Length: 194
Image (cartoon, rainbow, N blue to C red; front, side, top):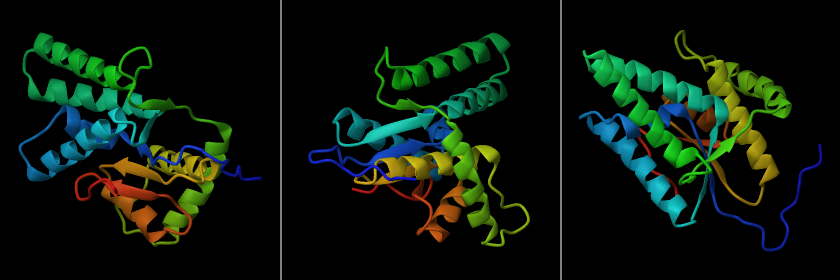
């Protein structure tokens, strides 16, 4: 497969692929210090995106994962179903403000393609080469995020590509396979690179 080369003057801003697990503490912050830290990472991303310093993307299927997490949290925190429904709808609407191109649109949607499905095989092979412990396993969605970021990095080779995730194992798999996989930033423990 031919790799597209950067042309003179091509945009070299960092690209961030945002996992649903990175968004949850932004919309549902808890009082735990690690949740506050994860929220500040997304605030920094949005600030830097608004200033045109970075590009940010969210895979389409992560929108569904965000909706699922938002529903679980809204209905888990509020006893009154009407209040929970209102909180859920407000939270989804706030996410759409950030993602929708007809609204603020700070984060671009990233569609799944056949190429990403082919890349997933390499992700699982890299993970299992690490001999993961019994509970540490990437989900299919996690592997797709890595595959999408890997493909994105190959397509925009002149710009750094990172994954933002709240999943420690996803970040670890990428860290331990740095030669093959894009860097993943654990929003609970790390900051955005400058």
